[in-house]
Image (cartoon, rainbow, N blue to C red; front, top):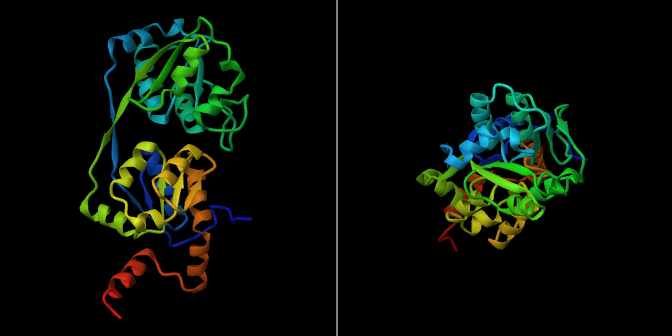
Length: 297
């Protein structure tokens, strides 16, 4: 049985990729258990102005049956608009979220109860009534989202992304308005970070979206593909394997706590070897050793 994350100490070197406040939370939690963390600057998040249709949807929110929110970032930007135009939200408006972090933002900002698929981390503000999971597919399994004929629904998300939620809600009879509240801006890695990624000079890397994984792949080498990769869903694991990653671990969900535990579990042999003094060089030492041995018979 693995040790609790709160008591485990390690000298693991971990690369993370998640941008924004949720990325900062994950980084802090990894440092709390002794990991040396570097966040790869692959992407930034930028708020978008509302288009006329989106602005009208906010003004007419009392005509909607419910709101589905994709991410904590979307929840924060949605709350900004609702707080400006709706000092008191209309009664009967249902809120749904894919994960607990999104639900927590909605509850803290708007004071609403939020329906999510059941999972390990939830509070009193969360209502659960469906099979376990934190994916769009799990959310769509909720009994209350099956019969939507003639209902108006708002979908708060980022620009682009999967169309599964919108397409499925429409197929079930809903009239869906999609709000693109922010966009993802790709960033070029610094030469130092690109070199570290290519050299595999780390113990584990955490990736939480297809976009981030595709950005990692542009700088990946065989060494990168042979290092432990922690992902947040089975769908992302499938994509990682397709790109050639050999050591993929799927976290229980996309929450910082689950991702941290997956890092510790995936790297348990390395951590144990270092703590007991067995032969297990750190990532930089291993690379240095390989480089110094080149050309020797």
